[in-house]
Length: 421
Picture (spheres, rainbow, N blue to C red):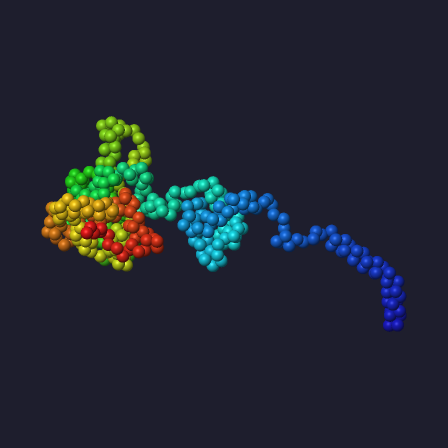
């Protein structure tokens, strides 16, 4: 039986040998046909690009102009480029040297084809963003105050009152610039006063009545300056209830006074336009120029080197340094005409507008005041002087101090007062 089965298996295999070969051949032929029909894969870097490279559309002269700007760090920020990309470009040039072609920008982190082409167009089109100019003080003073002030409004400011809000007192100082920018003279300190309002927490109604009297005492000016108030912080310490009450009352004092001074400016603008009241102007609020500004916190302390960590040191020594300089010294010491003329020539070579002239009455008042009053008077005056230097006069040396400009690092060790010899 076994022999019979083996013989039938061999016969069946012999009979179907041709069919199996034909089947295998058909499979091989079909597979080869499908393989031939598939497209040949193209490497990724050999794929044709859709469109042209915009960096290749610039002429030789245009490319030379763009490369010249790219390889000059001082002119780079004047065009359409972010500060972070400009910094990365400068770091790349320090490691690899100058750029030799426009395509080298694509080797720098953060530079895509679109960003590189956008920068090149700003260079060719001659578009210089004034707000990004390196030597423009307006760009650096944008974050000093709230709200922002435009150049036209800034040039019209001739006087300013700074208000220092304390726990139980208010202190203010008024500075006035010379009538003309051609006059090389210091700011005139016209008003300097400390006023106590309360020694305990008052009801809002009583507080408003006292602040209306303070508003009557504060002199008129083109603008009024507060220091940016501290943001409220959630404190879970039960012992900080008194501190929270103090912060709330200081915020109330700031809000009431700011509103009163703002309304004072709106009323003055209405009278200037020939109206008898603010309602008659029929103008929207945002069409009137602001006259109340808030200077960034700790900016004054940084400018006059009074910040140690996050704490302020006393301002009395800085005020005494400012008082040591007499800007009318030529009228007090020199009698002969030639000596007076030489002194005037020396003074003309030094800018005095960033300093303050104290009267004898103010010097005596400051020396007789209590220690805490001298501190408040000093803080109010320095707040005003910081606004004058940084925003109104846009003093380059002062801006370099608070912005930590490395190009002006040599000025940091100098005193903030100008000594006339």
